[in-house]
Length: 340
Image (cartoon, rainbow, N blue to C red; front, side):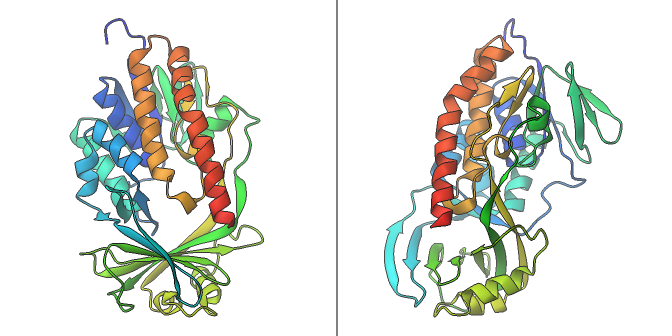
């Protein structure tokens, strides 16, 4: 690094954005430490996702693609159906897209970080930062040259950078996930079936080797529910359709859900020695399946900028210039897809 001013980076958040940033910084020769609010990493909230080719390419540049491939399944094709089960379209999904639970992705990246000697601290909820010193709810502190806010859509770091930063925007829908034993609908393996139902949008897939049918539902709503009757919402939304979705939801062994929000734009991605990555900067609804991949690309771009620029401000500006327009375009596209 020579006379590089950036020696140590504190990362608030141990999710995809935080751990990918730590791995990217390690690859760039910059020391970092991850501070995660939750006591244990990778707790399965029940959601699953797809890391798209751009995300896998980002992982490959930091030697993390193999770790994710090992705990995921290929996403090969997508078939679009209407509410009667009529096939509307079919196309391959660009390789090497990989499907996996959010928990598996967290664990894979965190375990890889620990294996590479990157400290990952749990139970550390950040409460403030001043002059390079970060404070946590348990009264402890950490110091570094840079604070990376990888602390999600409700980011504390975003507020520290700009107290007037916009609040996440309610996206008008609930997103529900579930897992059904076996393959009772006889779906082709590793294929996504996307269903435009009368009262919701559904996705079904059977990863080869998992032994379950994975499904999600996007159901319109008038406002956030926070802790809704998720299974019943999905059942009601699929009841009028002649597709496998309703029976799969009814037979599910586990159902979880949540309210969908996005952040169309964040005026200030950085301030002083603080900078945002992932959902903290640009959260998208899941319609375009780009949330994790955008976070990974952020990680690589930020680490590259910090390696290439001696001045923190110059690094942040280079990072933002590389990522802002693309991410805001993706967030907008996801919003349009989700509304449709």
